[in-house]
Length: 111
Length: 110
Image (cartoon, rainbow over all chains, first blue to last red; front, side):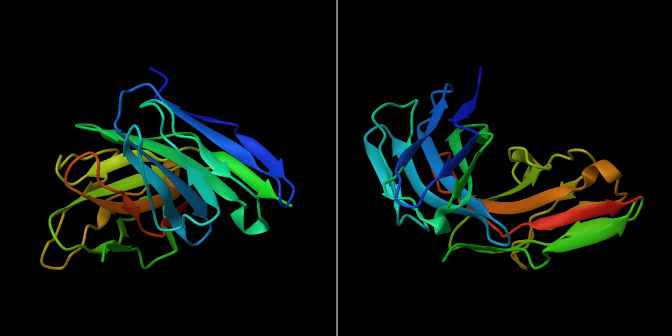
C-alpha cells in the first residue's frame, strides 16, 4: 500500500496564479484533511472531509477550496495564490482503528 | 473550545538526560490524545496514542484528566530523538478532527 500520496513535493508560484495540490489514499479511509505547517504555529486545519461529497472548513479555510468526488482523492485548490500561503501542506487520512496517516508534504513558495 | 497547548518551543537536553515534553489540552468531552514526531523534513509519524498505553522508542505518556495533561516522557534521551514533537487531540472515533499544538523542538546534545 502506498498510504497517502501527495503531489507535487515542491512548487513555486507567482502571486495570483492558481494551482491544485493533489492528495490520494489507498486505504479506503472515509476521513481526509488538509493542514498547513508554519514555524511557531504548528499544524492548522484548512479543510476536511468525512466522506465522498462532504467537505467542511477547518481553522484557516480562506483562500482554499476543496472537493471530494471519490473516497480516494481530496485535492486542495489555491485560486489566487498569495505570499501568505507560502507554507508546507500536509494531507492526512483517517480510518479506524489505526488513526491518522500523513502524506510527505508539499512545500509551496509564493513569490 | 478544543485547544492543545505546548508551552515550550524548544527543549535542549544532553544525551542520557531525562526528557519531559509538556502538553495540556482543553476539550469538552472525552478526547483521544496523541503524540506525533516529525524528523527533519519528513512526514509526521504517530508516536503514541493514549488509548493504546504503549511505549514506543522508550517514550511514554499518561493522560491526566484532572490536570488535562498528556506529557511525553523518556528517562534517557538519545541523539536520534532530536525532532519536532506535536501533541494532538481528537474526539473519539476515526472521523473527528485532529487538532495540533504548536510543537516542541527537542534537541539532544552529545
